[in-house]
Length: 297
Ligand SMILES: Cc1cc2nc3c(=O)[nH]c(=O)nc-3n(C[C@H](O)[C@H](O)[C@H](O)COP(=O)(O)OP(=O)(O)OC[C@H]3O[C@@H](n4cnc5c(N)ncnc54)[C@H](O)[C@@H]3O)c2cc1C
Image 1 (cartoon, rainbow, N blue to C red):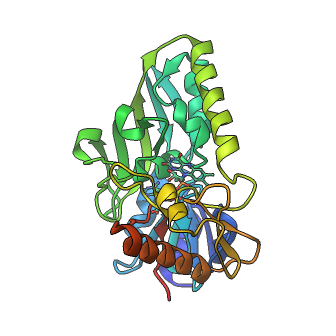
Image 2 (tube, helix red, strand yellow):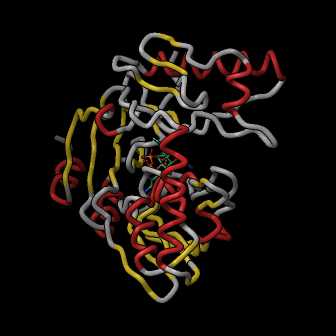
């Protein structure tokens, strides 16, 4: 092992050749050359100071919006799953990057705080939620995010107010190569049961309209202004279409499901087919929402 690898092994959990298919909800793709799971923010800061400057990094949360290439990821995956602090300060909740969004939503409901009910229906972590500006049911992270703390490539931990992150629909302008470690949301007081009921209704609505029993990565494309990617893909005649082991869901056309043996190549081929067909028929460019670790084939 090289010196930096020994250093990371001393600071946290360090492994080589880790299957990333098992770390993502879609369940496709190859292995990470290396993976590091820091036990706390200080260990992550120290680790970043040890790394060769050219080493490629990939932050990983729940892996619910990630398409990993079949060739895997030739660099260091940083899993923020152990950063799980969660506390309340008045109307503000502070959560570590590894807190699951549904857990944060439950915590808010328990405290009678409203504004993040949608998180009960999104399977990702706080870090991935901030990085994606995740949202649903008319709510998104940028509505309530007060600040995010990120560890940057130089190992410094810096706090950015949400206003400095240019958050838009499914997009957050994080400093290049930075890793979200903590975020604060400012909520409003509400009746606990009313918050819980809204969350329940959202979950029920989801259950019937998404292929939740098959491996998937949520919405594959962003909705173009004034329209829905699912409607366009369906109108293009692609709902249910298969390539290899991947299928454009016959339940929701903006989902691609893994029928058990899909490769990343199959998924990318479906993405490209949907983009080309929708462009040809409706002159609309579909932009992927799913993050691809590398665009192969
Ligand atoms: C069934 C299902 C339903 C979904 N519904 C919705 C929905 O309603 N709305 C919605 O917006 N999304 C939805 N998604 C997609 C996904 O859950 C969100 O995008 C979520 O925010 C991703 O979080 P994650 O922790 O899984 O991130 P990952 O998939 O692990 O990563 C996503 C991206 O964020 C980066 N990232 C992850 N953690 C960090 C970090 N700590 N610091 C910096 N960058 C980081 C990754 O490198 C990657 O580029 C759904 C997914 C599924 C499977």
